Amino acid sequence: FLNAAMTVSIFSTGFLIATFVLLGYGSRLLTKPKMVLLSRWEIILVYIYFVVLFKILLQLPSCVDFHFDSHTFEKLRCPLSDIFKLICHQEKPELLTDTDEPFMRECNNNYNKSTGLLMDALTFMFVRIQIKVFNSHYFKHAQHYLEV
View (tube, rainbow, N blue to C red):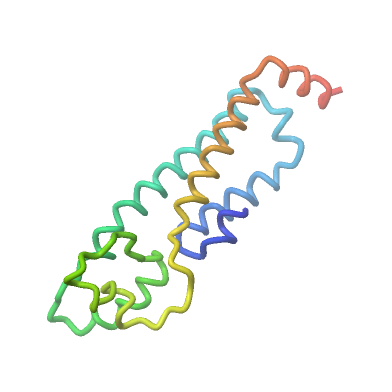
């Protein structure tokens, strides 16, 4: 939930949906068989992996200025920047310091310059720790305690 609240983008909706699905199960999720429990958390882990992959791949269009003749792309440039959080993280050479990022130049966005990759990495680490806990021998005792 923190990841979705910290960075507002299209990828945050997946984190919000996963959070509320897990909250909807309540403690019943912990009493489900181990494979069902692990499959739910592994789906979230795969989603986080693809979010990080797409955010890294989106660095190319956010740092390179593409010139299109179509007027519709120019109108969609700012909404695309907001939806996908297109922010360039590359250092510019000294010769190009007068130009700004292609998506920041025309769009007057006053948000912080973060795509949330740090929060994604922390979320990935947290989910990996959760899976390790669910695979532990001690979790079987916790499941037995919850069933009784």
